[in-house]
Image (cartoon, rainbow, N blue to C red; front, side, top):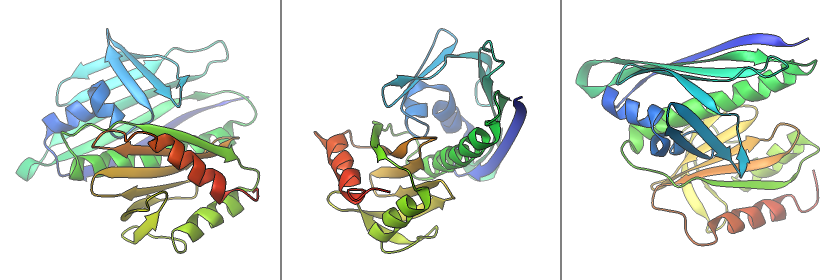
Length: 242
């Protein structure tokens, strides 16, 4: 079966078009808000998420400060994903950023995959906006950790939210994780949660048919053993199973 999709998002950001361009078109910039680690070289975008290589994406448009687009090759089943960023400069050093994610998802379970992709893209775009508003020009060192397998997602989120002191809303201050760390919730939907601290962004995502994923972005470099501490924290949180 399968389904073609288009998922647009836009926001006004407190960053100049040049700062937006660095964030959306360079490896260090993309590392600082998207998933895993990314390299942009030779007209190709390569991303590795938690050690897994994503399909390579070919740059199809590159107009500095205005437009950046890239698309993965169409597979035998027709699958592909394309990203197009449009940037418009506005007053007082701000910019309007529009991202359209489009493509084709094959198979009878495309609806579940599209739901997971959409909730994830909402989180990533919100992180881009947060990055440009608070960390523009700085580079994150992504820390990606996969927790234990999850069978009951409502219970998994209930346990995570309980660790924060209850279901959070954007703007709430929370404490969590090893340390613990403190921050402000900047985004939450049914499958993701994002928290901004002074020197890092902490994110949790519902893995598609998998575990809870911690996809954090420290801006002062990864501390030794940081990934292992977060893995241990997730394992303890879900020690009794979900």
